[in-house]
Image (cartoon, rainbow, N blue to C red; front, side, top):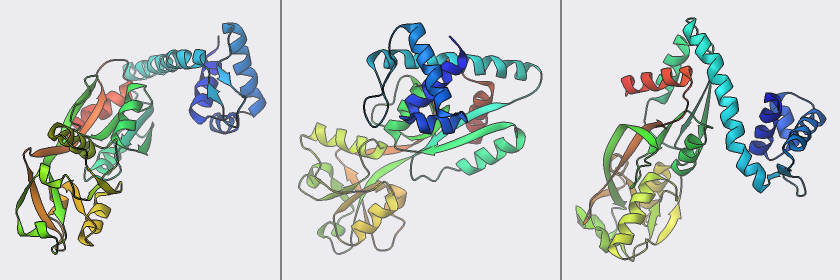
Length: 290
């Protein structure tokens, strides 16, 4: 079993295509296919289902994938440990972030790059649920995630921002006569919310379930400012960070009560498992900066 075979297997699994995987590893497609076939012969089982338009993992392939990733990460960690002991810092750091936030992540990454120019930094954007999954399986080293109603026990979180979750309506809405609104009063209202997988939505869904009803979501968008614009046009009640709800003259903010909802953002990384020297340096820098 060779490391390049594991690398090609992991890449094909992530890309779902031999062609895209070959482009990513800069190897001709027949070479990638041949190495994976050798790996399958050695293991005595097919790892990939090639029968459809896209390449999918077999059950055996899904079982092997985390071990292949761990083996590649261990080799990278060994190389980076040697660099660290000799005063160098190289390698890669993969960072994720939620779609819309006001954390100075560019400042963190630019300062880190200035101190460690030989470290390759990648940045991806997604919702909190997918970011947490990527942290768990090692595709990401760290991420800016939304604080959820039930924080993941297998991740470490450094809280960066915490604030109240508020409602906001058009000044012409009947609720604009009030300063607060109990959550049950929103039972039959059209709500404008972030999609499932985001922190604010998880707080909203859990609180509504506890109150005995499901929220009636009329509009979803991944950008809180879009939610604010929709509410300002009278299309429903937006569920927003309090700072966003109070940032527009064409919106009337409402404090949600019974229960009060709070959310926020955190810098997250795995609680256990190997951490490369480069990732460890970025995490320590983020904890100091935030």
